[in-house]
Amino acid sequence: MNANTFAAQLKQQGINLSDKQKKQFDIYFKTLIEWNQKINLTAITEEDEVYLKHFYDSITAAFYFDFTTELHLCDVGAGAGFPSIPLKICFPQLKVTIVDSLQKRITFLNQLAHELELNDVAFYHDRAELFGKREQFRHSFDVVMARAVARTSALSELCLPLCKTDGSFIAMKGPNATAEIADAKAAIELLGGEIKEINTFELPENSGERNIVIFNKKRKTSKKFPRKPGVPNKTPIQ
Image 1 (cartoon, rainbow, N blue to C red):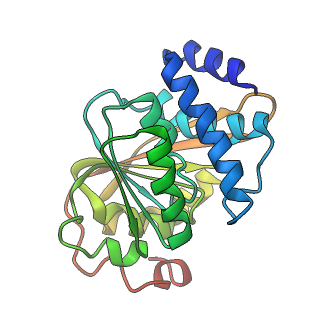
Image 2 (tube, helix red, strand yellow):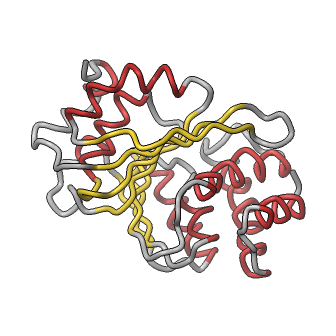
């Protein structure tokens, strides 16, 4: 998927990129590849694949959820900025907070935000389990997102504590989403969430099945969660 096809595909979904936004994606790609030579940000480095499997894939959440208002979004384990930075480019009014456990990635994201001239973005070097315990962040975000970070049972423990009551948790998943959600039902309920919808589709160019899973936050999460770093992954809530 080249840059022109990328823009055309988004236009079909009602997302019309300006010349400035197209330039931002071009800068994003070039900055990503430049930094990837110094630190491990992505195994996907061909331009067509970056546009499809990182940029377009990140934005697919907007096909099923309205990002056009002034939402405060938290991206847990964003790595090189996916999905929140592509969404921020498309919807500049978003306020974005990214938490990632590797300082080198946070350094990259700060430079990227400078290169892209982004406002209302904040990057935190922290474990998600510790970040979710901080009073200034618990129950404070309209939307919490994660893409390819962990199984849903563990992911819900990292993300739901950060959601406002009546906010949304969006998990971007591959083809195993239905089985993962079945395993995570007890955790989601315990953490104050409920499944709203599962949206299944195929990425263009036979690039595989994707699932956008949207959860509602119906009540505050117990202060017991998230547990200590590493525990949610090792011992998911049953």
